[in-house]
Length: 341
Ligand code: Q9C
Ligand code: ZN
Image 1 (cartoon, rainbow, N blue to C red):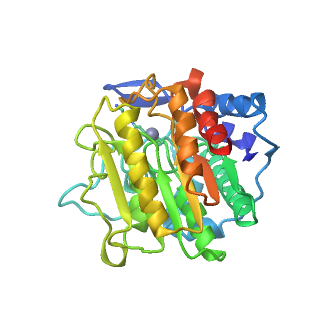
Image 2 (image 1 turned 120 degrees about the vertical axis):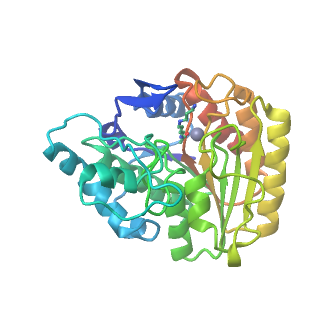
């Protein structure tokens, strides 16, 4: 299959993240994409192509226009206040507080985020635009008849919602891709999210819709980030009831239990009968992932690819998380080669 890749991901390189009560070097870093790309070339997965520019319109189909303006202008506002380091939020409107967009940049950073995990840097806006274009280009390939395509998106997207960033994510690449398919002739789309963390952004975007099915396999929110979404009783609402499926699993889960959840999710997808499956491909389920607690091994990722292929649906793979940098290339590309063989 073809891979879509843009060097512009480098423009977003956060220096630090808040973890274990301290600022540590960011896990979501450019070398992640470099290693995946070199593995794509090493195994001869297929041609690597540059993304096309889809403009702002498909982003506005998912994200709030004020949020997009914020992402575009946040760095300039931050810099104007005399700071040249990563911009981070520091307070959120929780229970009983007012959700009104503040005028000042520090307030806006908080208003348009749900955690301090998505620092804005000088190149964040062009990098996240490129990442969305990577996803859209791979999606268009599949829409135009390819059986599958790989969008090597970076930064990732699945924690980003209609009007907030978080968890290393700014634009929800998978949601933008799914909506683009809906706007270009597909009646039904499934988003299968296999990242270790719950895809809270994607779930929230499609929660009341019956045309985009969302399925997520992830660590139990009782134990794991993002903590406040991802329970199994979240089944969708209104017209969307029955079209959201969560598989929370406890810390320590290995491929036996995880694979059963995947099989169940695949049955749900078959029953739904989508025109296209969009896979939010995180490989932070890997046993050596530095911020995660599942126990998948490298060969398990081949089997994941095989199971997804057995759906026999046109499939778009979009990169999400995975922080065991040394093995990220092998693990991500194993899903893709498993799919092809
Ligand atoms: N103790 C993605 O994988 N920090 N985002 C968690 C763990 C945020 C992960 C702290 C993790 C975000 C796309
Ligand atoms: Zn993740």
